[in-house]
Structures are given as structure tokens and as C-alpha cells.
Length: 318
Image (cartoon, rainbow, N blue to C red; front, side):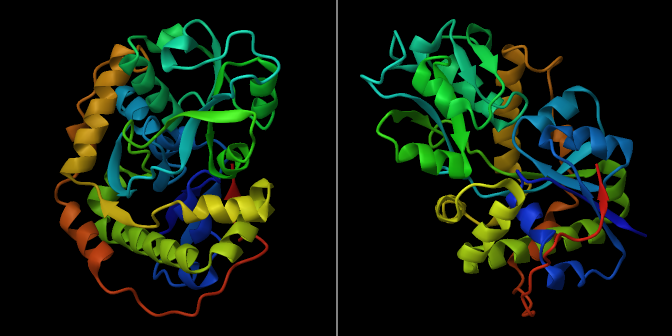
């Protein structure tokens, strides 16, 4: 039976897996890649049967669980403390009438971030720690224009990640107000549809094993990985090389530590009215799958010829 894997540009491990011939050709079963732009759709695509396996950040699985969608956690990246940060204009920057010095200063002001992504979890946690609620800021859709908005004072803060963060950090007109470290783990999470995980655990493990090898390739080939990223999303090769080097490139099974993190996030996001109902994240974990995934992530990696697929592999697109 065909294994259908969802791929989008914001899930690094899946992104690089989709570009590596030696990994894609190594599956014993037929493989189909489904490309889509918005990682927050992962839960819906799993529930609809468009994909069997996908990846996203910390918020989307909880939104899916709150909607009763049949998704389960399979694995996660190690924490990514250097991946994202909340940026504000530096003191003395022309434009902002009221400089932001603390998170509490964001009350009632516009902030650019990706609603429904890990940014939502990050912002909700920061605001709660400052005695504010998620409803106390005005969300703005984040884009390449966010840094211009920040400098002009059109927005008070911006959650940046990847190469955008690397580039912004080099500007004297922008400063980091808060990093993810110590606030959220900012993991990349990997999910499967429940019936697929229960009936075909070996196939789930095979995908996780391939993701592990994709991570190993990205760690060993940072410059080539940066070039592939720029081909897909644009930006600077140097900035992307720096951003990718900040990622841990290590996967972990979906175990008790991840469950505890997701439950804390679920409780926080329900209190912030992001989730429609309380969520018991234990319903999204399959204890019987954990030993298989653990073995997949600890067994010695096979030696293969490492070649990239370029142009992108033929597959169904969203």
C-alpha cells in the first residue's frame, strides 16, 4: 500500500527528506509526497486521508485534538532554542512612538506572528508570564514586510524564525526581546493518522527512520542544505546556512516528556481561548508505538549514497 507523506517548507526534516533520492528510493512500499503550503493544515489533511504522515509545530496538533481529529504523535525534534525569537525595534529607532522594553508593553498593540503555528504557543506563554492574556495583543499576519513594519512602528513586535531571524539580528535597528529558550521547547512535531499508526506501525517507523537520515544529511551538508532551502523559499544562502546550523537535527520518540509539554501547552491555549475545548493529550499518544520508534531512532544508521533530488520530486501538490 502507498505511504502518503505531507511536505511543507516549514518542517525542515520533511523538506529535506523530499529532496533526497537515496532516501525516497529506499522505501519498500510505494511512496507519495503531498506538497502543501500551510503547516497548520496538517491535522485536517491527516483526518481527510490526503496524507498518512505529516509534520507541524506545537499548536496545530492541539487544535486538531480539540476538533476531535484522529491524529497521534509519533516523534519530535529535540528542542530548538535558536530557531525563533520575539523582536522589537531598538531604542532610539525612528518610527515607534512608544518603544517596547518588556512584554507587558505589548498590551493593546499589533504583533506580527503566525497564528495557529508554534508562534501562537510562544506568544500565549510570554503574555501569560507578563500578566496579560492572548487577547491583549492584536495579531498581524507575518511576512517579509514584518521587519519594515517593525522599524516604522506599524507593529510593536514580530516573531521571527530561521533566516529572517538571522538577518534581523544583524540590524542595529532591531533587538531581541525574548527567545524561545526557557519559554517553549519549539519542537518540530511529527504526526500520523490514528488508523495508519495502529495498522501499519512498521510503515510509520520507516518514515521516521528516513527522517532521521534526512537530518543526518542536513547536519553533514549545511551549505548544500542552505542552497536547497533558498531554491524553495528564497533568501540568503549564508543566512540559511547559519539558521539551519542552529537546529538540533536529532529526533526523539513521542514519549512522556513530549506529552507533558503538549499538555501544558493545551491547558495554556484553552485558557487563552485558542482551543475550543479542554484537551487530554494522552489520547494523541500510542504507547505501543513508542518502543518501535525508539529502536528506529537508536539503531545504527545505514550507509547510503547521499544524492539530492533537484528539481523537486514529482508528486501530488496541494
